[in-house]
Length: 236
Ligand code: GTP
Ligand code: MG
Image (tube, rainbow, N blue to C red):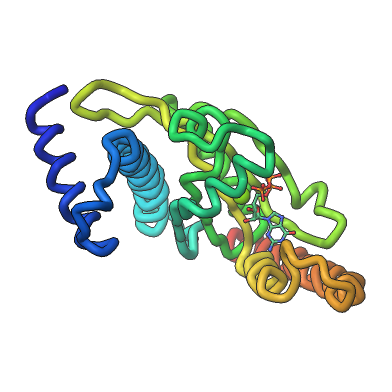
């Protein structure tokens, strides 16, 4: 083991001991400490991948704001999945809850959400990203063409991008959800009301939530139409 690594390990053992009571009898085992360290290192990698992809999206947004009359990106949000959610997902699927298992089995530890003004912007952003030669598409789920039965709409991409570390290049997976402002409005509220909650009361609301999603989707289509009419007029 590298001496610096050993020092860091000891530093952490001390800090964690203080944190959890600082009692000498509660020595933190080496193995646990190393796993905490490995987990943190992996999270640094996911955070780096988020930065890479966010930068790509920001560059596209900046460029298009300057060279066209329309920026297809309204906002970019990102998050790293919390340790508890990672463990829960792995164990639910009957997979080992171990650091090595994370990169192998999960595609959504690094998540980015891109909010666009119009439906056409979603596909434009998706295409611009996929055209970049360091972006590898792993999977694409189009919940706009094929909405979920509850009415959920968004375009989901799982991509892999290379990130350069001191030890070399690593391909890291990132989940990108691309949706309109309207789709995001519905998804955020639905998440608060219902997502992953299966109580009978909530089930009774399902039809009404679906109805809201459909109305919102019609509005999205209408706004797209209006935009196309205006841009045709501008061209005349
Ligand atoms: P997860 O295990 O939840 O990651 O699902 P999955 O691997 O089958 O992927 P899917 O593409 O269905 O969903 C991934 C993510 O999309 C979720 O974690 C949510 O952020 C979002 N999502 C999917 N379905 C819904 C939904 O019905 N409502 C809301 N609000 N968000 C959803
Ligand atoms: Mg998920």
